[in-house]
Image (cartoon, rainbow, N blue to C red):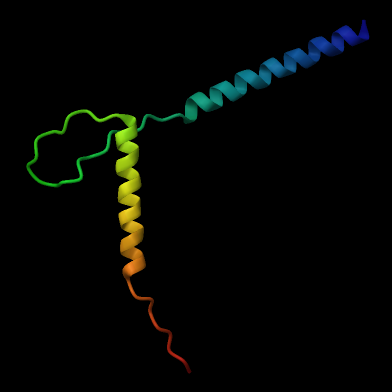
Length: 80
């Protein structure tokens, strides 16, 4: 009988932890806004893009930013 109560208690604790984790995950999830068009100005709204295309756009923008930073010369330190 002691084992049955222990098993029931364990399952109850597991259920409580599961509910708390589910609530926590639901409260932290956010919707990802659509990316703005890369070309500023009076361009008409672009057609809807897929998640894959958006991912590739973000990767390309990141790569361009890193490449631009890598092209800048490092500042020289004064030797005293």
